[in-house]
Length: 540
View 1 (cartoon, helix red, strand yellow):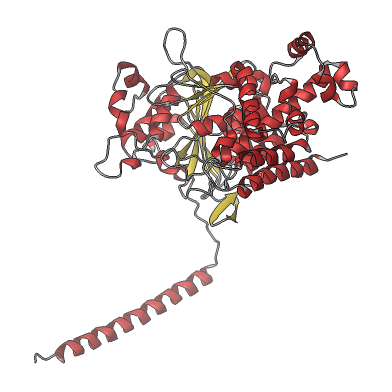
View 2 (cartoon, helix red, strand yellow):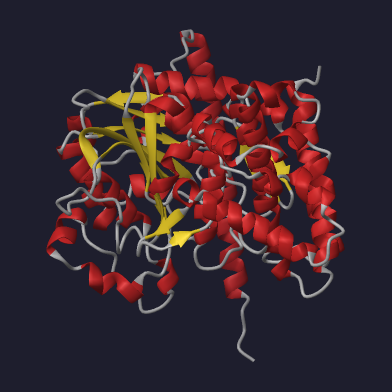
């Protein structure tokens, strides 16, 4: 029997083979390569999920030696009956749209057009289930016409793709858990979700950080809750949160200005059995036009919010449009001023923090990645936000992470935890000394061990005071420290006393006196030498 580790290797090998096909046809490192790789992977995944689910509900297909041939002979009524019995998260696929059917037709004229049309048709058939919406209401379909990214040899390219897919099956993994899919997803997109994407840079939140955020937010069994990320990226934070709660106990909501990120998040939801939430993925500008609203037009409030927002971004083009009555309440601490130089240094994360605070239910919780400088800033919007968190008694705690926890940025980060129902003390954790430094490409990265992750999570959830790691403070303590959220500023200064005898004390004192006498003698000699040199100076 194939083990999970062995099958994980086979899945990664398939991804590598698809990338190799792209490279052989001149698409290696091309801007469209990620669309081809992720969409072809998704087509195969949906194909095999359809096969898997069909066999579960139809005995004729389950017992057939060649189930595809049996399926091809289904009447229209049999097809419709099968579709009705499939789970709501399974794509509707017709016999001629199967991978095996395309493989048999690969020598047909204009195979690339057939390949493209097959994917487009599957997307159209399942539009209501899988389409991502823009803030303007347009639908972003599941698939593109992939062969059109090539200028020539389109038929050969599509043949090469279909021949990689036909000998592989995902059927062994549909019962696997989140950890398996998260590893596969990260491997699938590792070359495409980087900070090289221009203005709207995307960062992959490390799983250690995502796990700590989720486990510190969700400390009890919950159900029928809403989870939101206003800058979702590819969805790492949301997937960890949903996994902690249970995929069947929560609904996911998101918004992100990047279409690429929205497409990757859709793929992540499909892999993690969260198809029911795809309708809530929105491609759009959260700060300018937050999409998720109630029937009366007010912004929707959420049970849980997670976010790793962009820290700096030029939003001067629309910052003046934010001055409305509703936004004055949403952005209570203000909007960063437009600098004369380096507009790209505008601190947009401050806008996201305020938006998140505004978007929480009365008992809602949030975890936000922030630059560590935020927790100690002495003035400005940063301090106003901290004052609000303390005075409203909605601050749960802060975890300051080790440097280089993100391999792609040298900025030190902390995680800000908000709990609108928190009336007790606040836990501040300084985890900056934890972790092991490793090289990742040209960058240095700090990795937390599982034991260190557990230590942080346990310390936070128990609100424990651990020497050189954490402090538990009251809201009054924080106000007295000028609203600083740095654990180090609350650590006690330890003075170690060593017992010595009177004789030892006198001996040490005599030693100090002799050293001082020696220094004084050297000082006098140096003084005489300098005076002599000065007298010897002559004007010529």
